[in-house]
Image 1 (cartoon, rainbow, N blue to C red):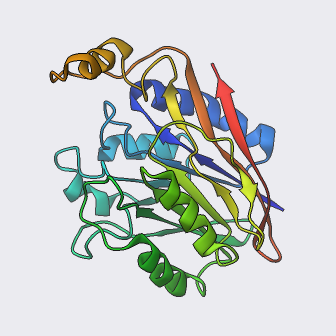
Image 2 (tube, rainbow, N blue to C red):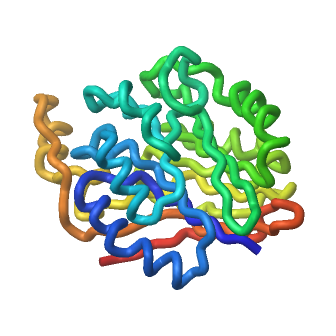
Image 3 (tube, rainbow, N blue to C red):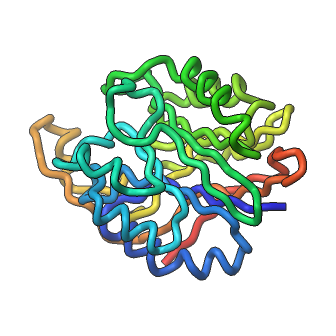
Length: 260
């Protein structure tokens, strides 16, 4: 049996520091073999930089995934190909820089991961996530013992549809982007672990990781405001998955929440 922790969207400095402080202990406590984290929000809440990616990898994360904020930080498009173990969404145009998947290894077991962006209510130009997933699975199934698919999407219906679409063909389909952990972690009938959203790693005394007052004010009057990253009630949120090494099927999935 192998264990995977997939950490939900890390938001800003509070999320980064919490991961750096707690991840080593978590890996030991739960005998975790693989740690994957979505880190598209680590740079002041929007995007990532090369130095921040390297610091997260040094803290014990094995693979970093990204989402619709992938290009928010100036210069990252020139750095992404120089940082190992970071991949951008696979259904972006092929001309975009960076890896479209990663393969990491522990105890002789090869784990592939890739991300697809949803297309409902999302702004980036992306190909159909379902057809992209088909293509990626065909490419990776001979290279890895298990495949993890992250769907970074706004619509819960699109995430659920992806789970059912890939059931039995991958080890897990895990949703990110909306920053609110869902209560639907389950093993689908053909053995694929599914969860609609892993939540976020950052401040929960917030609105999706941002200071509350300016967000509420924006809803009230519609005027533009700066949304600073919040700092209170910091937590790590993600999914802890047990994988049967022989069949590479998920045996168990549960929401993992770690509070300060």
